[in-house]
Length: 173
Image 1: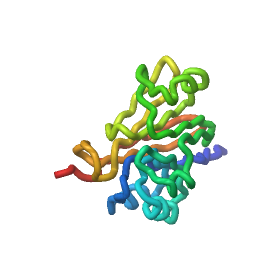
Image 2: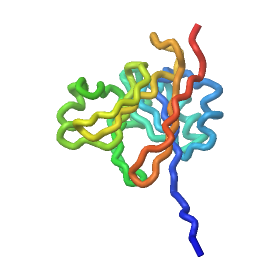
Image 3: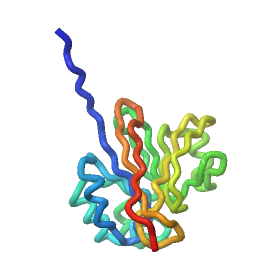
């Protein structure tokens, strides 16, 4: 008799740069997620409270976030989940162009998954030098130069990132 393997997949919703705007379809896209991760520029505590009431929230503050958000969320968040070392920060740069604020640490002790926001440019880039996946979900808010509001969704299982999805909420007019 064969036993079925039951996975402890964690489904993650990744968002950034909301700037106080929560698109009405975010909850629809994150309804099956176990956690929401926010990579900064939340905007106001009402938005983070709304997300926390919906799903467990891990977040960092961004450069536009005021004292109330900064009191609740750190600048950098590093943790292990599903055997995966994760680092979330708002301003991080990109492979071969990491920001000075993270440069030394990311080269000394690279995570397996590095997440940042700030640029409003959606990216999923592997850094082969550091053996690290870099994610930036783009921007889900209406402030900034981006043309499309975006999110990401993915699964975590035993140190692996699976089923990465890019979600376009709407084009800006």
